[in-house]
Image (tube, rainbow, N blue to C red):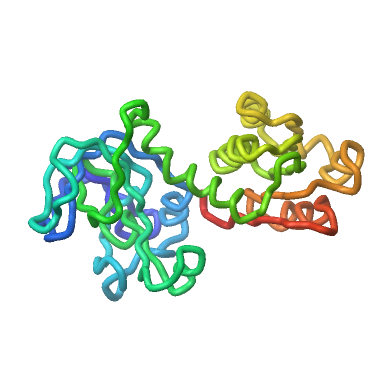
Length: 269
């Protein structure tokens, strides 16, 4: 089968690739939709970052070369011998994060983690093997295409959960890429009264308005701090910094109220 395989920095090859043998507790997924994450781009431009090159990944056991792709959905094609809770043909989405599962969910990842698609072959192929505990059934009203967005959507939802955002709070989101836009949707669903989105791209700002931003501002034309000062009383309640550059980090701190909660999302989307 063809796969997009990471060999090294600026070295991703689309090539024929043999499937790994299916483990007893694994599921083989036929991939129908996959998203390209910013992490994939960073691995291409600057890697290795998460990918193991000199020794096996401590959670998933693979070294480069590795098939990229950790945002994907598809259909169960084959079951490992010990997998009893799923059936061939079921539509599923993959949670790519693998951790020790020794502590509560909110602190478990601090003891280390890896990803399907970085620590082992992922979804940029027709088929891939995934631990059975990392797949979830897709309901009939969710398409495979939408299923490929579950993982990045979970990032935004978790950010809102951790922020302590309350119904009626004002929110700023700096960066209107995919994760920033998903943060708009999550903040709106959580009851934010005003959502200020800042970005340099008019196209992204238009999409931010479409999905629920009450203010979509080009930060190349408007000063972020001045705009928030003009449209709020002493700043916003919660800020999500989703760009990951020095100036936006400074802005996010300065525009948030002193009784503040500022959530930085330094994921690589």
